[in-house]
Length: 279
Image (cartoon, rainbow, N blue to C red; front, top):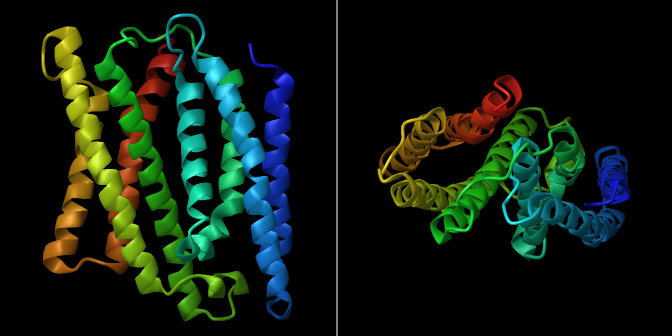
């Protein structure tokens, strides 16, 4: 069993990094933003590895208990947030994406909360059939799809802030260090394309897993319904982009709608089953 101290140390490190970024970046005056800002981002980028590593340790030891896989609501949310934070952190090594590290503070805050969720919502019983290759592939691809589309949703919110900044130049100066809005939009659709491909593979692998275990290709459930609705939303967005040149606020709204639907598909169903119905 993971020591409570490991959870607390990782939690405090997340909070410290988020607070440090918030204090030194968001509250810096325009005249003071320069080389010190670069040093701050660079320092935080490497420091973020410590809580991420501790977070991974807590996840591994809380999920792999005995022969089965404990993947209740707390572990599910914590895993998705960890993978989202890790992908976002790793993207900072690429020079073209370094300007997007504005979201370090909110991501660190989200990870700090998420790491404690397995303690608040412990797994009641391990999942069945976790030894099957189809299930392992399905879970891995699903986690990556969730994480990439979560980053897409955060990126869409950041684009909203940048767009408002264009109309109100007196807004916070940190937004002036971000890439141009058109560049951010192209990056948004690249992330969505990658997430959409993984979401498609998630649904297909889910069908294969269902056939392998239950003998039928598809079982109708809340998770299945909202999963396919989310897939349809992102498919419509990408089609609209290709055929009609959808962009700006339309793209942002469809991105957020697709991600919210995806949250309802898995996290929503787990919350209802484990917390409300206690199953």
